[in-house]
Length: 271
Image 1 (cartoon, rainbow, N blue to C red):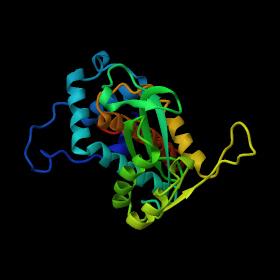
Image 2: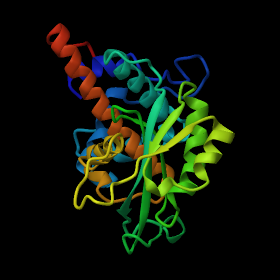
Image 3: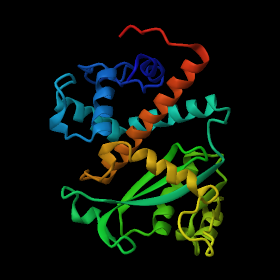
């Protein structure tokens, strides 16, 4: 992270339990070192054991990553950055509309057979990422499943969680893979309007569809992180955490750029 990025993210970090008087062992490395190491791994797609010597030892970095994954701290930091980004863009902290879509990605040999599946459309054994984004592109929620899971079945798992976390959410745009009884189910059980944006049959080749292009761009943002070009993770919740770390880095950079544009270069903070 640059100094400007660290200045922003430092004030949004969840407070460790030992600092809040809840006990536990104090951490041996500062958060900036650990976050830099995790972001380096996600951005460059290295193995954990290939962590450069300038970072803390890889077992300590992995322990930090796993602890933040299992306790939901990475989700908490992601949501705080997302709300801050929406505020500087002149939006409400929580969105009222969203876009949902899925992407199939190749699964590495380390991925267990019980967490991968055959995608009939792509004709390959892989995993599938289901993304829910706001209308500007940043992530709201993510679900990783075997590629054999249909979009409709995944939406029944993804949308209830999102509806409980984002109280202002009233409408979700989707593609033709979400047709059927799902629209009635979302209205009846979640109070959400599922608006299916269909592709025109008389147009061949690429077609930028209203609203749907937003989440396609979000998938492209994720693939800039080399760790996400293929799914290397044994656990699906680890894959979801890596996706959140990728989005954290993206939103952190955008917030720092906006601060630089409005206030000039930030002063170097004391570490």
